[in-house]
Length: 171
Image (cartoon, rainbow, N blue to C red):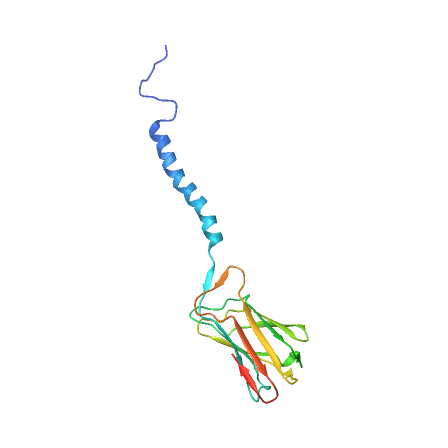
């Protein structure tokens, strides 16, 4: 004869099922919430400024200053400089200050500068060149943040420079 033991249960008990459900529900909820939150968040860059600088007599050392505010300007940021003159020599386009960048001459009147390192918070980079100046030359520098970053409060993403051989106005 076979002995039957009344305390033995061959299926899952209610207690085991509840424990398993209690552990799996939070994991599923967290996994579902994470991708949506990560995809929607941008990093905000506050207080950066792009400003024209006249240099000596409006020709030697003229250019732009890119200054970070209370947050860094990230690597991958692009500064596009467009002028209605001809950039006389791309080799004299120089960068000084904090941050490293690649300089690409896109055409005789357009230069693209891409940061390969961040400009740290409260740091700055100066961009200078030699221009072939006519009666009046207008130049604009525009800073574009990489994907995943947005401009925050106190930013000025564009600077201008109007100059002749002896007169210069920068903002």
